[in-house]
Amino acid sequence: MTLAIIPIIFLALLLLGVPIAFVIGITSLATVMIQGTIPLNALPQYMFIGLDSFPLLAIPFFILAGLLMSRTGISGRLIDFTMILFGRMPGALAQVNIGTSIFFAGITGAAVADTAAVGTVLIPAMKKEGYPAAYSAAVTAASSCIGPIVPPSIILVVYGIAANASIASLLIAGIIPGVLMGLSMGVVVWFQAVKHKFPRREESYSFKKLLIAFINALPALLMPLIIVGGIMGGVFTATESACVAVVYSLLLGLFTKTLKVSDLYDVCIQASVVSGVVLLIISAAKFFSIIMVMNHIPAALTNLFLSISDNRVIILLMINVLLLIVGCFMEISAACIILAPILLPVVTNLGIHPVHFGIIMCVNLAIGLATPPVGPTLFVACKIGKTTIEEITMAIWPFLLASVVALLLITFIPWLSLVLPATFIW
Image 1 (cartoon, rainbow, N blue to C red):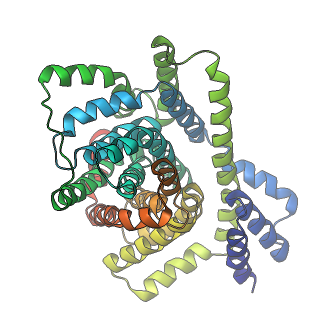
Image 2: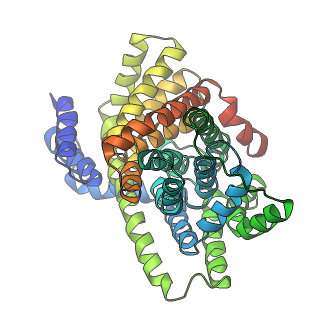
Image 3: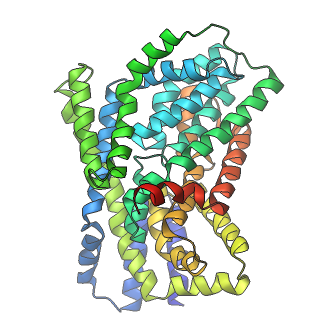
């Protein structure tokens, strides 16, 4: 009876629209009060334990670095550079949209920020060249989901904390899967561009133009290179790389005079609010996961999966379906920190590396950012593109299908996730 209360309370609060951190906290509190196995005064201690981790410092620093880079107006330079690289391909602006999202992901690591920064420029440009509004918004919303996979990635840091996995390895492991997602969407655009005769840019691009665009975009491109190169070279840890990213973003903004000293207060306040929300979720979810372990739910779920099948392929497919459904309804950080400790024993019994599973899990949940009914990138893209949620939902499904194909390759070809950590970290 006690265990049945947990999902009932959780789902009821979720359906009522209660913020996810309070959903987790209230559910945990109710369970403790019903069971009486943990004194109430221990609750704050357990929640503090969830935050008492040095690697967690990477989250506020990565958020701050992303906000500082966004203030520098660097997205325009990235778009110009990507335009020269992909501008003559079929579906030129749609390909540029995807390419820019990959580059921009290496700056912010956040899908919604990607949608807002890239979409503000490219969605109106695509509409002007004759692309349907819903299609323009759909490309932007779908490609923004690459943001949480390519380093710096907040969700991979969250998973690393929840699963006690190497954050440096996770950040490096996300590079190839992120690019693979972009390539899969690019293939979709290619076929759709040929079928619907989307406009192709005819202007010629010389090496000189490419060089100038590259130099202009270089300050933005250097940030992910510094982070990844520093981690791979053993110069600094993943947490230290976040601090380096903040210093680099700050110096870049002040040096180029795109960031004023007076802007720093607003940026720090915004970063504090965003970080506070994420860290509150992590704190509450830590206590929730302790309750789960005390009630042997991870072991019960492992036994449930293995009772259905002991086939590795079937179990992985079931987990993927579960995560895709969860991603449609639940905030990505909360879903990760709650489900990672529960599902990790299942996959470790199958011999799956925790880093590989981390990429599988985060790609699943990232796809949910662009799926109805609560996909945040959908609503941001809708607002920018001035289209409806129904229209963008119809336009986005080929891109979601392409992302699922990429997900299956990532799931069943571990090399895609593990080759870079194995080469540079382990």
